[in-house]
Length: 202
Image 1 (tube, one colour):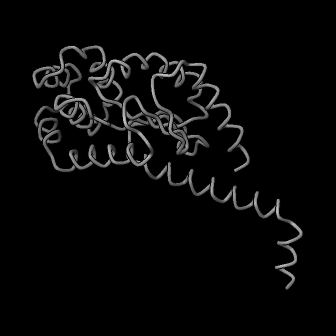
Image 2: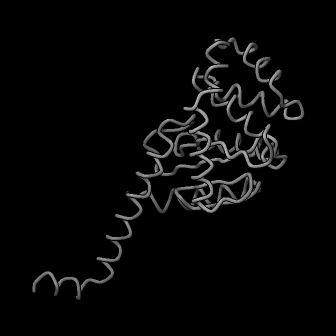
């Protein structure tokens, strides 16, 4: 009876407590979802921003400068991660496998940058060429990009994007909230600032 009376007399407190609990569980789920992904930022960040990209997507290429600016400004407060969402062509998929293979050797960000710089040349020859430039173990690189582990990972990342509401690229999940398209940097900053303030008390 005492508990029932407390709930009746404190509806806002109960609602706020449930909201914080839901936010906390959502943030924990976001961190778990990206635990093995290439990332920049604190592992315990209150905001997780996932980029879902397709290496043949012109808008994805266009937004890279914006993302670089965001990572530079928010790297101490936001965890930035990447997941492949190859939906435009078979070559999109092959490029995603190559980049994830480079990630297996700790060279995701370097390889990722080179892929965007050479977007018009996507091919098997390019993937090997870039691996050589970065001095990757070529045998391991070729084995990894043809492995079921990497293929399953790319598939799982694509399914996560679709589950989050993504139907095109670039697509982003910011603490589970979907953002579509190559938004201007000011729009991303506004969202990140709002999220940082909202989750600051957790």
